[in-house]
Image 1 (cartoon, rainbow, N blue to C red):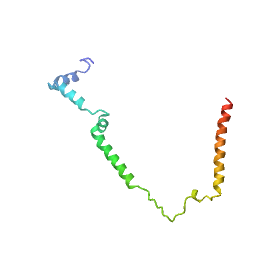
Image 2 (tube, one colour; image 1 turned 90 degrees about the vertical axis):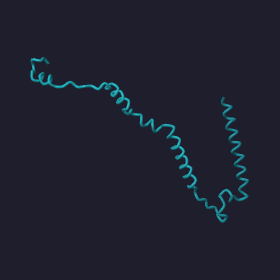
Image 3 (spheres, rainbow, N blue to C red; image 1 turned 180 degrees about the vertical axis):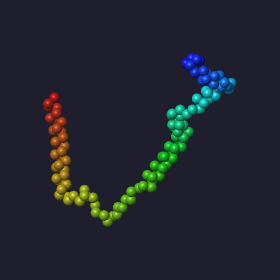
Image 4 (cartoon, rainbow, N blue to C red; image 1 turned 120 degrees about the vertical axis):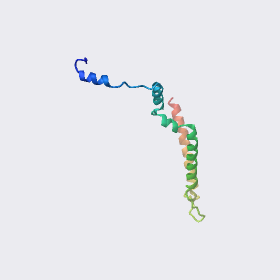
Length: 118
């Protein structure tokens, strides 16, 4: 823009006072930039060892208290019926023994078959 284009604007700008800068302007700008919070600054302050150790201690204490107080009630009386395994008839023991022997021979024959195919 030339001075001849808008004489009134240039006259008005000539009458305006010049801004006065403080001698400490650069120092104040740098201080403001340093004080501006960074995006992870608050997260880093929460993750400091000084805060994490007590928080972890409280969390462990709460979990331990919950586990200590939450014990399932076990109601076993001597009058209750015995387990199913204890109700096997004596004559069934021979059948169970035969089944055990059959399983052992079946497992060993399985290994024998695999070695023959190699």
